[in-house]
Amino acid sequence: MNLIFLGDVVGKGGRNAVKALLPELKREFNAQFAVVNGENAAAGSGITASCARELLETADVVTLGDHTWDQKGFENEIHLCDRVIRPANYSDTQPGKGFGIFRNPAGGEVAVIALQGKVFMRESAYCPFETVEKILAKLPGTVKTILVDFHSEATSEKLAMGYFLEGKVTAVIGTHTHVQTADARILPGGTAVLSDAGMCGADRSVLGREVEAVLHKFRSGMPVRLPVVETGLIRVDGAAVTYDHTTGKATKIVPFSRTVGL
Image (cartoon, rainbow, N blue to C red; front, side):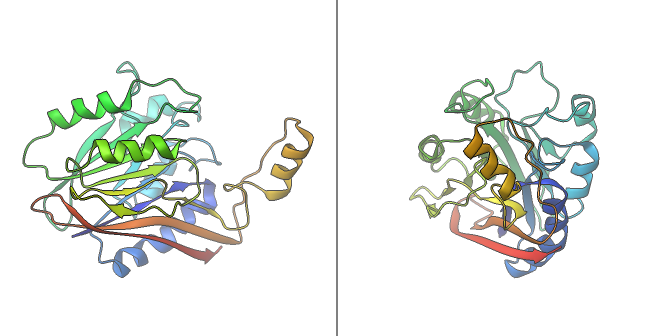
């Protein structure tokens, strides 16, 4: 079987690009299940229940990261979004869930786990390595396909997580930097690893933000509003993972990047 993972969705342009291209990507890769990181889906920072529903028109699960609570009121909405997963290594007192088991339309189940890294990250979170160990111990033995979205800044931390989970999960795919890395691999234990999937946002931008505004911020050092680029050529970055659904072992990972004019 095949599944698709898409990198951080940035703003309305990213959401529209996902709606336009994800059905085509599913056909291209014969993918039965799709996970999208949506933590920047609402105006480039955070998510709302409305944005989540929009993404879930084509995706099966939405994962989040360090901007989970940026949109006011989402802490009261997340319980309405049973297919939205926030980082599991947040405090248990926070609303939402950090993992879930979902039905694959083609048959069987897929466990999706969201984790947040600690290296260079602004938000405090518990140890992601200890957290994922506890989650794996809770999963039923019948669930073989397990996808981990590791939302982290440092590629070293992401790769370390890949090796830590080698042979235990189907794939460890990183998010957060919005820049797709060139290190996709299948570890000998049957785990697909990619340090960062990239983003779903404007092609001419700096991580989805207006180039001129970002340049001004870097050159001046002054606080500057960084508008999200919503129109023009929008890219959709991600990866397709081929796996054996009876064992959960990955056999192939193919990163991709597509564009659509909006």
